[in-house]
Amino acid sequence: AFLSMTPLNRNGSHCLDEYPSFMRNILVFFLPVFLFVYETKGQDCIGGSIHTNETFLYGRFETSMRSAQGNGVVSSFFLYNLDVDCNWPDVNNEIDIEMTGDDDDNVQFTTHYPFLASSTHIYEVDFNPHAELHDYAIEWEPNAVRWFIDGEMVYSQGPSAANQLIYPMRLIMNLWAAEAVSWVGEWDPSIMPLNSEYDYFKYYEYTPGNGNYGTGNNYTFGWEDDFSSYDDNKWNIEDYGGFGGNYCIFREEGVEFTDGKMYLKMNHPDPNPETVPVTFSVNTDSEVIIPTDKIYLNADFNGWCGDCMPMNHDDGTWSITVDLEPGEYQYLFTLNLWEENGAAPLGSECDINPCDEYPNYGVTVSRNDDPIMLPTYCWGTCEDCFFTSIENPSENAEPKLLGIYDIYGRKTHPESGELLLYYYDNGKVVKKIIVEP
Image 1 (cartoon, rainbow, N blue to C red):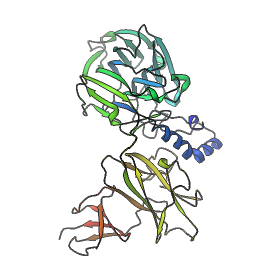
Image 2 (image 1 turned 45 degrees about the vertical axis):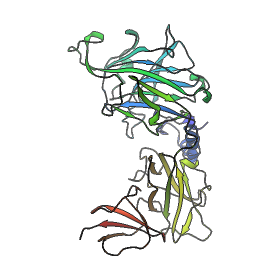
Image 3 (image 1 turned 135 degrees about the vertical axis):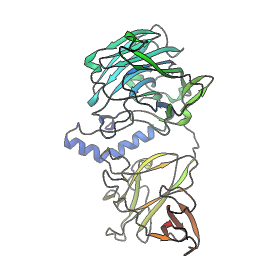
Image 4 (image 1 turned 45 degrees about the horizontal axis):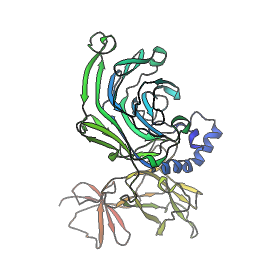
């Protein structure tokens, strides 16, 4: 329940600045528990999301689409400022066309502005948008936003709304399941598999006084995609992404190009997903540790559970190996449950999300990865606590070498001039920079 109190954008970013200090403290203390709620729900279904590589400041955007039917399901065609850096919600901008699967005769038009303001209009149509393809378009210019269905303008907003839409945005299409029952109805996973369908996309540049298309002939054709195949020069498919209030995690397989159409798909997650062994380790030589102390791994993948993942101790270094599905994860180390945190320095180079208030380390697990050996951080720092040496590969050969890894934890082979991590069966890890003789 508390998670719904924190503002979230479509990338799941939190902003606590709007709350009194006592409320921020409560939310910061409990947020790991809330994030577990989000992560768990995010595994209930696989959805699809795709966005343009290009950003647009004004223009006309067209598609032909059929939305997906079913309670809790949202199909979309919208513009959104993905490139907010650490400035959300100050630079929040969005223009939506959305269909909810519980409603057979309405289409929703919404604009979102800085600091979480928004305006929504529900337009009644004389057809079922889930049953067949129809043409939809958005015109965005400095003083107006217009929405079109099958070539006819059906709704517009004037300067009071459009003047707040000032940031470049990307065009996004996605299919997901929402938690907001009052908006979309209660989601039932048994209705999967589902899909939404898109036949084409067209972009027209805003060229006032020099165009030949759209309202006032103020638009000029830019480019189009007939969706005969995936063009990664134009598009980016989201993989292992999501946002707050979404039961689904977006996966690459949730976007499919076939028979001259693009389909966004919603399906059950793989019951036997692939996993990759990931080894986490931390050194506590800088801390005063007594024999009864324990170090634990706490992360979003274990629900920030406190003491459910005790780490193994060997001469000042604590480690544990966990099998993880591909995805992006955040973690930190704790002493004696939550007595002390061995986390990334806030805003540092190893703080996975410097825009938020939570100093977590991060790791990305990809498909077909070799086992990942993460850096052994000195407690509460970004520093790797292992000795760095410069050696000739023909000298000082170490017996029983287990593997050689790059600084990202990927198994590799020796290359001159590259910083590498050598792991041995006695638990020793040595960083080496190879120099050719």
